[in-house]
Length: 186
Image (tube, rainbow, N blue to C red):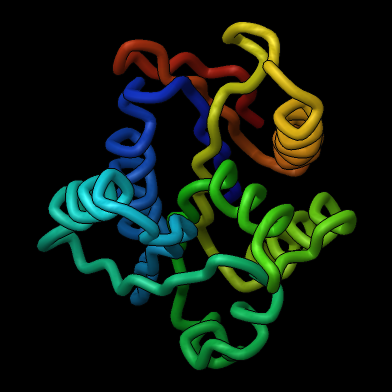
């Protein structure tokens, strides 16, 4: 089961996504619950956001893995994703596609012009090994037009990734002011 959760900043999408992956873990009788964190801790504001998300997950049984770039490599090398572990059942919350996309575009270790392909290859590899996957992303193109070409390119790349993930997903939900709105359910 692959579920994409989208919404604006502060919409409640993270809390909803956590709830969904915890329910999937129970439903699929999975033994492993991972949180793949993509936000680079590069300042006080991001450190506070990371701390808030850790507190939200506290006591829910998540094992946190950091992945700033190259999701496919993480999945292929992390012992928790090996074939025998996958048989025991793996559920993963991947948060957040907007950070992963920015990291791939702008970090020295990122995929740069191959960002779309690199991110989607990582998602496909992860999906193969999971009983449940919930990916969190941001709603794009709902705010003011981008101020510069670099922002326009970022939004275009993230928009393409979001569209392709939605096609791959079994379910897509947009969270609006804390209210989940089903966009797709198979």
